[in-house]
Image 1 (tube, rainbow, N blue to C red):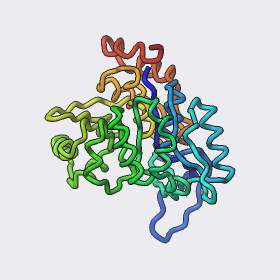
Image 2 (cartoon, rainbow, N blue to C red):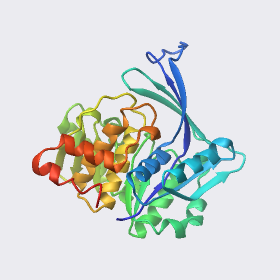
Image 3 (cartoon, one colour):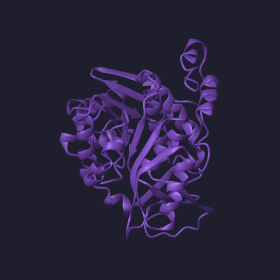
Length: 320
């Protein structure tokens, strides 16, 4: 199995359950409140650890109690934390999340220590980084650091996966370093500067990103599954049935499942399907990391919902 490294954010999630999202200037009373470990980078690393991947994490936490607790949590879930540093004088990143009864969410992020991850940190951890094969990025750390790391890693022959969220302006020079880009439909519109309502328009928008240098687009489509777009080819890979409770971290779980399957040597189509399954399982509970499944749970879930030869093709994912 290939090894995986996540370079990204580590946040504390403050989650409030609300009957509906507030209007501007309106105050609502929450039905409940909880604190979770989060951040897109940390979520992906924890999800990979729970799946049983060989995974490292590179990032920063603050010199507060949340930072030390987060490092301990990563280690407990099988993540190598040698690449995490404590930023003196900074708070650990924080995400304030509202979740409605349908499981939809609204999120506001304060970067904290995440904003202090610099190219010099990449240089410091280089000998540790270069041991991994597949690298996952998101956009909750400085873009300059992401571009610097991607360029060095691509020159070293590594595989790059970018979840381009939250949507941010990216230099065109960055796209050529990306092997797999996993935007949701809103993010495809943002990066392609195109609005689409139909699948063919989605393909046209994705092709703009391919022309910029991205090798493969995996467009996450929620309850519809995902669309795999390469060159002139568009392939729909369906979703799994689920009852959403909290969609926080669903995209992170998708990326973890996708990267796990690639690390196992599976095809891109199989990787997308596994990502769909991990994401579907993760949204059945409140919280991101606490809801992430093991590979055994994923394997049982996929076998239940896939029939015949298609089911057979995934049978060894948990045990290979």
